[in-house]
Amino acid sequence: MITVLYFARLREAFGTASEQIALPAGVRDLASLQELLRGRGGAWAEELAEGRPVRAAVNQDMARGDTRIADGDEIAFFPPVTGG
Amino acid sequence: MPVRIQCEDFDSGREIAALRRGNSGIGAIASFIGVVRDVNDGERVAEMTLEHYPGMTEKSIAGIIDQAKARWRVFDALVVHRVGLLKPLDQIVLVVVTGAHRGDAFAACEFIMDYLKTRAPFWKKEQTVEGERWVEARASDDVAAERWRLKG
Image (tube, rainbow over all chains, first blue to last red; front, side, top):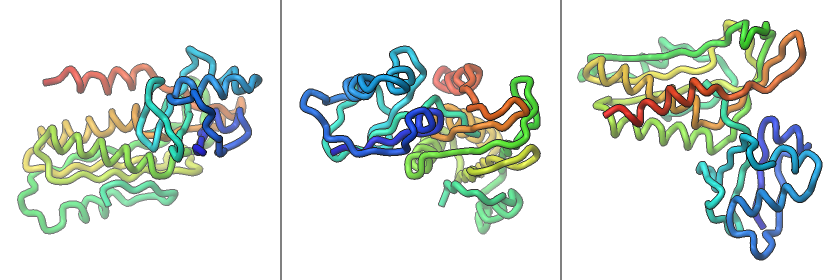
């Protein structure tokens, strides 16, 4: 299982802050996880569409599409940051 | 703790006093305070809510402070960032850097702030007369952070 967290606009659009997902075989990096989530359609397809400004972290480090993911990881998706 | 995320307000005088206490080698203290403006992108802001990613936010700011310490000759740095409901005039963020000389302290303070704006996971949602809206990231903040890579 992996834990997936959503923040800010994404949390509101998906109506959830976190979920546990059983990692399907073949989903080994961030890009393929994002594709899996996009496949849910609706807000998922819209917010996670390619070209949308979505950032991600794996185990609390900023990550890219080719960042590897594995069982037990904490993954987060969020919009570009606006603190300070 | 060099990084604190909290709902409560902060007292910059007290924070600076605590950071410099007992270190007679300090000759310069640079600080920055970010506050809530009443207008953003042409709209009057009634209040805003700041959200963060507990754990990652602290970790990313600690990493930014480490980079600043590796790059400039400074003694110490502190970042206090508020989350939750904030109104115009409220303080949002405090950055303090102590060093022997002002040049390094100024540069490290500005670097920490520029990197925080573009890398630390915080999100602002504003309440305006038109309703709620998530604040969009600014390209000018990316430019501000990027120039530190180009500087020698």
